Length: 499
Image 1 (tube, rainbow, N blue to C red):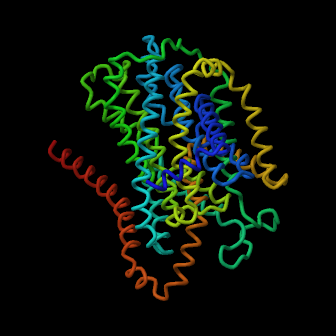
Image 2: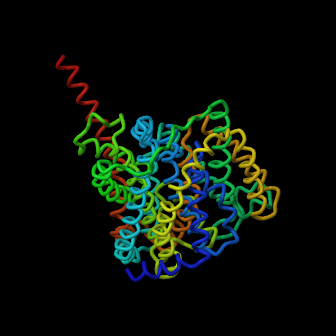
Image 3: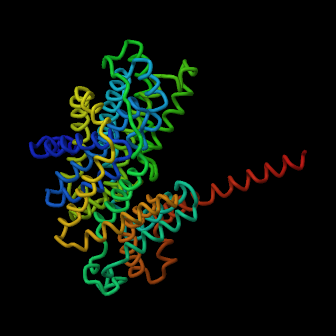
């Protein structure tokens, strides 16, 4: 816990408080605006952090992440439009509570649940990180490679929609990561003779184009004719009954969400859905779920905030992003010459513990700021999306140009924006692409190192039990779903025969 105390010293520095406040406020704003989630927000704002101190930059980006996790609940409750994916569940009961004149209570319960979950997450990270890092210090190139491959397997197993499309996205991401200089020899690859591509595609431009600009293009089409009318907020003070019924769902959601956030492919969205299902099992009022049950707001809102905190553990301690947001955070760390992984706590403790402590500080800011600002957010919902998209596109173009003062970056941004929009129209999940792009470089580097160290690859691998265990776990993730499908087909065939 000494590291966490040191983290608070870093997080409470005036400049870091300013960036924490700015990130939380911008994140809430992004969460409130329908259609823009934390992934698009971080992609758009990455250029702003380029000139900052690494600690301040990562604290700000982390603030955007959990601020958006909080802000999305406001639109979910008031207009039944989730600001981002993890607030989808909140629409079910939050909007019903609003229709019953309890919108203020729902918003307050969501805020308190998020604050409690953020506190639990920060403390849990302090307890878990050191034992995990002591174990991970044993990792060499083979172990790092196996861990990164496990990340790919998890992406594939948990990918949305068609598996073939997910494989195509992973292959495309890997190919994009290979453009530029060879990681060992320094020879240019796939640059097509264009000097500007010698250093490869920048994480910021690819992320802004595929996630940011692509999402803006899609949302212009989606929201151009949609009008939103928020219900009255009412009193922000929950009743005694609301407090009583929310206490255990918040506690369960905080613990459950954090544990799910630790898993590759987990995170806030999955945590909120699972929490909702758990609360339906535990509640004494099952008939109210879907009709304004306060437990349906308290549990998922706590879970999604705790899941966001938990997803920082595999990112910072192992260098393994489990979802698109943490992949962008990994890209931001790399841009600032910070290598997340087992040695990060020892080499850059101010960043690791500063970010962890800032989560708690940021959650305090969110509660103190956002409840009084509910009226402003309601007015913001009345602004037509068509009035916002032009400024967002201009902001991203300026950001892309400011990276290297090079107009080629603008062309690449527009190119990736069109690609991102096209992939969405063709129903491709873009998350595997960005994850593969970010992980492609580390995978190639560790693979080449492993091959140079191993005269006999099979014999070398047999002497690395940690790597074998990780690869074995990945193989199980592939095989078990196959067995499940075969079993279902056998059961269907048996049932047909009996008929």
